[in-house]
Image (cartoon, helix red, strand yellow):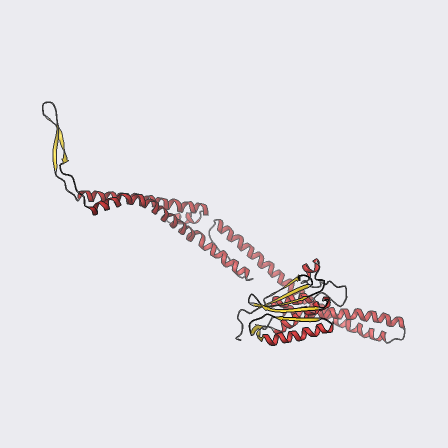
Length: 396
C-alpha cells in the first residue's frame, strides 16, 4: 500500500487526473452493472409471486408414441396487479436512468477528490505566499513536497521569494548607507561653510570694491550651499518621520489651511479659492503633515498662477484628498513625468532644488496615500495629495 501511495504522489497532474477519471469510470460501470442485476432479480421475484396452472404436453410420432419428456404450458393467463405493473416499469427504466446519474456523480467525485488531493494545498500555499509578498513580508518559507507541475511552481515561487528577500536586504543596506552618507556629508560640510562665511564677511568689510564684489559673489554661493545642506538634512528627517494621526475638526483644519494659504497668495498678489467638500465633522489625520504639504503645494502654485489658486478638500476612498490647482501655464511633458522625483525643477533659479513635490510625496506615502501631478482643464497645473486614514484609528 505504501508503494502504491508513493507512486500516486509522484504522478504528474495530468497523470493524476487520468487516474482519478479511470478509477471513477470503473466505479460507475460497476454501479451500472450492479443496478441492472438488482433490477433483474427484483423483476423475477415479482413474476414468481404470481403462480400459474400448468398442463404437460408431449410431442408424438405417427404411431402416437411420445417423444421426449414434454413441457409445461400455462393454461390460465397471469393477472398482475396495477401496483406491481408500476414496479416492473420502474425496474425496467431504472438501469437506463441510473447510468447517466452514476456517470455524473462519479465525474463530480473525481473532480472534487482531484482538487482536494492535488490542487488545494499548493494553491493555498501560493495564495498565502502572494498575500505575504504583497504585504512586503518575506520572512516565510514556501514548502510543497510533491514533484508535480505545481510543486515546480512552488519551488520557483520560493526561489523568487528568496531572491526578493536578498534584493530587499541589499536595497535596505544601500538605503541605510546612503542615509548615513548624506547625514555625514551634511554634517561635515557645515564646518567649512561656517569658516567660509566668516572669511566672506571679512572680505566684504574691505574697502576695495573689487574685493567686496568678489566676496558678495562668494557669499551668494555659500548661502546656496547652506540651503542645500539644510535641504539634505530635511530630507533625512522626513524619510524617518512617521505620521501621528489624531482626531481633527475639519472646520478648524479648513480654517487653518485657508489662513496659511491665503497669506502665501496675498504676498504674491494672487487670489485663493477654497472649496471644502467634506461631509464628516472630524477625521483622524496628522495635521502637521497636511499643513506642510498644503504649504508646499500652494507655494508652488503661487509662483506660476496668473491670478488665482484653488484649494479643494474632499473625502474619498477612506482618506482625505487635497487638490491644489492654478490658472498658470501648467506642467510640460518632462515635469509631468518627473516632478515627483527629487532635484527636478522647471525653474532656472538657484534658490530652488526641486524638492517641494518630492517632500509632499514622501509625506503622503508615509500617511498611506499618494501624490498625483497633472494639468488642469482647460489650463493650469493641478496636484492632488491623498492622505489615507489609519487602519486602527484612535477613538474620535
